[in-house]
Amino acid sequence: MSSVVESIDVEVPVRTAYDQWTQFEQFPKFMSGVERVDQLDDTRLHWVAKIAGKTKEWDARITEQTPDQRVAWTSTSGAENAGVVTFHRLDDNKTRVTVQMDIDPEGIVENVGDKLGVPGGQVKGDLERFKEFIESRGRETGAWRGEVKQTDLT
Image 1 (tube, one colour):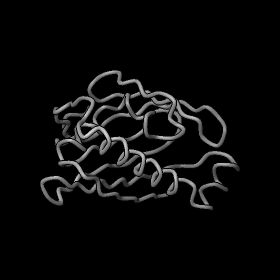
Image 2: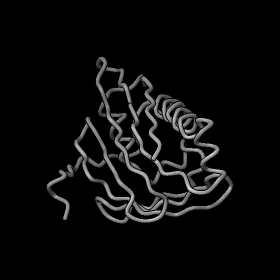
Image 3: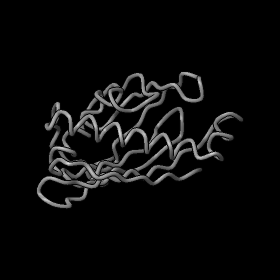
Image 4: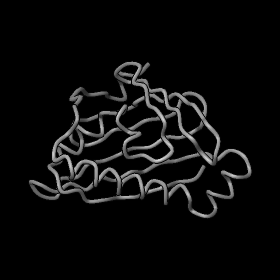
């Protein structure tokens, strides 16, 4: 497993940043390589992405979600990954978004890319595109304010 930690400050209130992040089906608008995210229910997602030139699909489960604070997930099939995105209020109109992610590169191309720091660069670029996306809009495209507690999962 390889770990990635990246942060960015966005010029929107914490609620706006968090609410946009809960719109998983909008991820292809700012995450390069992500072709599609289907939200199957409140806690299950299906991902389709191009990684190292190959189309990959996997399922993930939201393991914890607290409005305006955090969204945590783990893969349940396909590409092994897990992580958390946290939202920190810096002031009324500024939020720090931090992504912490563990990934398990598959195959020689992904492993070489991992050694060269490609996943960290990918996450950094995705956060920069998220910043541009949410700041240019000034508001979220939607919101899900529900909560998922680790104890809710079976």
